Amino acid sequence: MPKDKSNLIIATGRRKTSAAKVILSLGQGKITVNGKSLDKYFDGLPRFQAEVISPLNSTNTATQYNISVSVTGGGVMSQAEAIRHGIARALSTVDLNMKAMMKKEGFLTRDDRMVERKKCGRAKARKSFQWTKR
Image 1 (tube, rainbow, N blue to C red):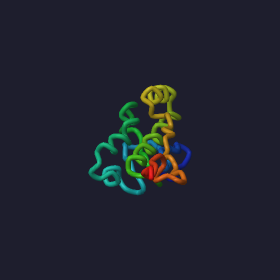
Image 2: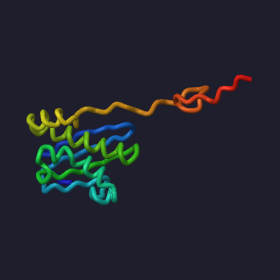
Image 3: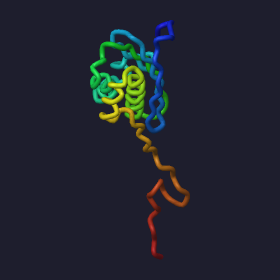
């Protein structure tokens, strides 16, 4: 991460219980997630790697910015979508044209679906125990 903090763009992305802090700086297109490269962090999961870089591909800025991400909570898919949301938010502050493109793609919309809580007197959130007549 560069020592000069004046040209850094910091954004937060969220999905389910995951939160990703994204730091965007000018560079060659290097992406690090929790100190590991993107390929190592999502090892063997090309679907999630593609999910993370989709905002960069849609705006043709994949080789213009270095991205450092700190992500916590949730599962692998939730973390990938939180990173995508954070990258999209960071890129939208750079240029208004990018913001319009990403709004159209749906990258800036925070997906607010969460796991429903378990209710008392039930087996799970909605599942009931088997009903017996006698």
